[in-house]
Length: 218
Image (tube, rainbow, N blue to C red; front, side, top):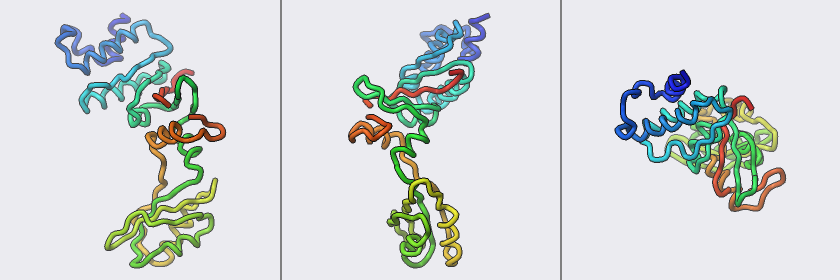
């Protein structure tokens, strides 16, 4: 009964009568996962579970890992940082054997970025930097990209200040076209590099390889 349950969880039941040696690498990975699940462990430790898989198998394996959350605590050890962002709820970064950061991806971004940064795309027909600098709470405005019909700006806000409504109002009230407005966040790659190449910040420390944990039942 446990075998059947593990095979269903790992989505290999359709290959029950196939010899393992004849399975694709993706299915072999799933068989290994089924072996780990058979005793219904509280914690699963997965080391580079998508290494060597094709894009379709990678997506399926990530979906499988996410589906196991809630029944198991999953520790995912990987250097593929986009995988961490797409799969995990908490991130643990280790540098030379020392724990240097433990938090959600979002909180790490806020702590390291320092201030909120917006990307705004405006169809103004002229430079809108001065008008954007006049918005309360704006610390810095710089041109990110310029095109014939619009200009993109990066706007840095004061700490703990949400300026999105005021920025949108400043653009619209002047009759300009507001084409895009979105928060800019550091990628995990940028966080990784900042923690490994710069002096540790208060409350954070510096990663040889990130270990990411998908939370579930503790």
